[in-house]
Amino acid sequence: MSSTPVFPFLTTLVLLPAGGALAAALVPRSLSERTERLVVQAIGLVTTLATLALAIAVTIRFKVGDGGYQMTSRHAWAGALGISWHLGVDGISLFLVLMTAVLFPVALTGGAVRRNPRSFVAWMLLLEAGCLGSFLSLDVILFFVFFDLTLVPIYFVITGWGFERRGHAATKFFLYTFLGSAFMLVAMVALAVIHQRQTGVFTFDLTALAHTRLSLTDQVLLFSGFTAAFAVKAPVFPFHTWSPDAYAAAPTGGAVALAAVMAKLGTYGIIRFDLTLFPRATLDLAPLLLTLGVAGIIYGAVVACAQRDLKRLVAYSSLGHLGFVVIGIFALSTDGLAGGVLQMVNHGIVIAAMFLIIGWIHERRGSWNVRELRGLQRPAPVLAAVFTVVMLAAIGLPGLNGFVGEFLILLGTFVAHRWWAVVATGGVVLSALYLLWAYQQAFHGSPDDAVKETRDLSWREGLVVAPLIVLIVLLGVYPKPVLDRITPSVNALVAHVDAATGSHQPGPAVPARPAGYGAVARPALQGGHSRRLP
Image (cartoon, rainbow, N blue to C red; front, top):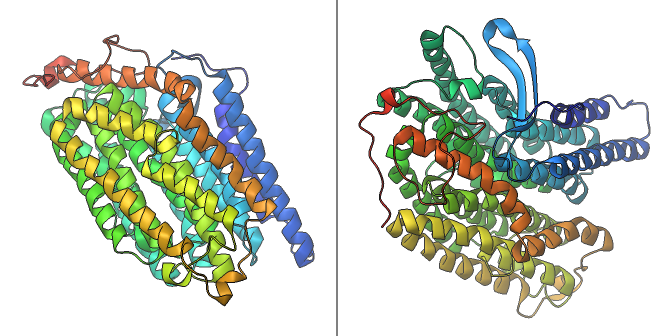
């Protein structure tokens, strides 16, 4: 594990948006409505851009080839309870942090609201702090605090600025995810107690807990507790039922944050905690999770084919794409896991652009129904062109970012679990079907008189979406710098699973005891089985 840097980059990265949220909330109410709006928007933009600059600095300082945690920051917080402020970044979390920093200024500027901007900006900045804290936490209770903190701002964003049935959607989302988190909290406490009995030290530090000796039964039970929270948050089929309602009801900025960033907390949690703490349970339960991932891909695609509402179509599309991430993770191969991490970033960029464009269409036409949008391409050709690029990236067209992640996932899964990969490939075909159909319904055809008056993409909207289009193309054409930083940490994690289970995962040879990950002791893992390459 790398030494703590002189400047606390990661602590500042978390506290900066939290401070911006406080500043936005404290803007004097005596200001005129216009002045208040300008001040609050300036606070939001400056804070998110400063956070982005700091995230870029962290990325530049990150050492390529180091698979352990870097730039760690560790301070006593509640020592008597075994809780510490422990932050660290590795190749798995690095680009999720950078993606978060990129998307929040986009969400604030592209999905700005007219009513009560002070509260909206404050909640969004607090949400950014919670997401960044979740990606960086190396103490499980600290992670839990940030993980659940994200529920509060997104709940108020949906209820305060959402659309039809927003109260119902926000409440359903909150209750589902909070219930899943309750199971995770119980599992965290149980793990710490087991660790204390073995070592005499009561701690919630991830790097220490990774050395805890657990029986297979304990691993399966604790894995289930953690995964209950992660599967709901992602969401993973069949724990997804809150997501179409929440995505459809959320305002544009909230939908971007919810689908592009918050959903990744679930899949990231599976990688960071399930694979690190419960490798034997992960290996034994992988076929079940692979089945759920493939079911999500096919189910999401089939239901999306039947949608007439663009926003709900994208919501079900997101379920399918996250299904690909799940099968990449539980393929437990270096290609599959690296593809899963990359696809989390790619999906975040694509789904953010998709919700932005759909939100702008709704501002113009007041509807998401494709039957009421026919012929948009004629009055808004630039808008149609941008939507086409994003749509093709979502389909996985070679040369755009969606292809690289899906290819690595299918490659890694095919080597280890052939039939799951074959079935999942059908989801790629179905995604092309429903996205092309939606494009034809909304943009082709003869527009009516109302549609003919639709304005094209403005220069301001073009500036907002342009960075996402650049990233879509850049990551599709040249993903090597990203993969060079992801792969060492993926190799380290796969080697940790190998060492703990006695299995051999497909992938390049890596050290048996990599830095940053604890190897689980052999006595607790006897009876493990090896997986042979087909």
